[in-house]
Length: 66
Image 1 (tube, helix red, strand yellow):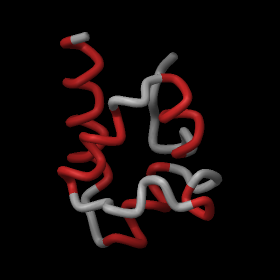
Image 2 (image 1 turned 90 degrees about the horizontal axis):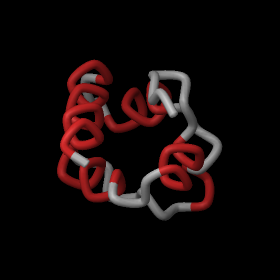
Image 3 (image 1 turned 180 degrees about the vertical axis):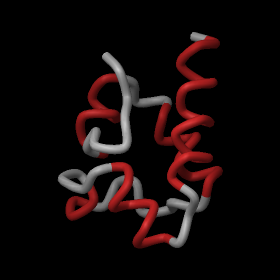
Image 4 (image 1 turned 90 degrees about the vertical axis):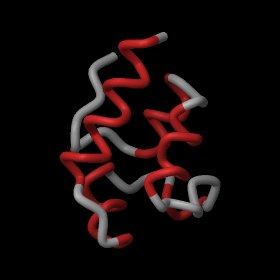
């Protein structure tokens, strides 16, 4: 699966639950919140004031190391 800015939080976490740790390190502490599941990565980053490109890069590095 390719993770992009348009990938929903639910899709990412279903694909690789370990991504939750990366998201929490980035500042998204509401990863398990039911309302976040339908948000895209880009939307979630915007809500939390995070740089989506940076978070996406962290996720891609994590997946590459798996």
